[in-house]
Figure 1: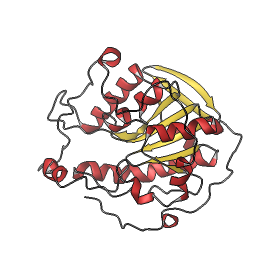
Figure 2: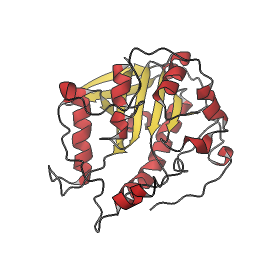
Figure 3: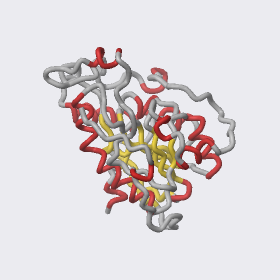
Length: 268
């Protein structure tokens, strides 16, 4: 599995300031739903990017390796969004205590409570809205030989922090709680929410800050389709390669929840 050195000072994670904070330039996106593409110009000051569960390791070695490959690309993407003035929220679930004394964590905690129209919870698949997922995700591991996922889970989740190659800047925020993130969004007038990270079929959709929750809260939501990955074993239906499984899930999200766009929209 991917291992990283736990450095106690967040400044060691990434202390460089973003360029042109509060920039007035728009985030010009090509929002796709199936074969339809609609251009959108989102105001950076009204936009946040949530990085979901990009941990330093995982129960599955293959999943950890894919996160390691994706992480520098996520960092480049959020750096571009940050430079235009978008808010970056780091949401590595289960390991927020690692960041307890940081200003980025305290920033979220200081936001006043905002009353939401719905409760915050893990939102599992909603058959009345989306039907079944297009993949059988009952198996977390596609490695050969398979990882002892159940054995690792019994010992406790192995992740300890967000992977270090995604830098945390002074103006960012840290939380894994939907209510806290919503508080900050309401305080700052955030209307648009971009999701990236893992895993597409689980946390990205289901967390209390995930796609289902944010759509139901009435936010304009979009998924970065090349900065996400699923947990899926191609030995399970529909018996397609891993990347195709992720692609099928992105199509499912576009059809039932929100549009997607490529990271290149901000990296041009």
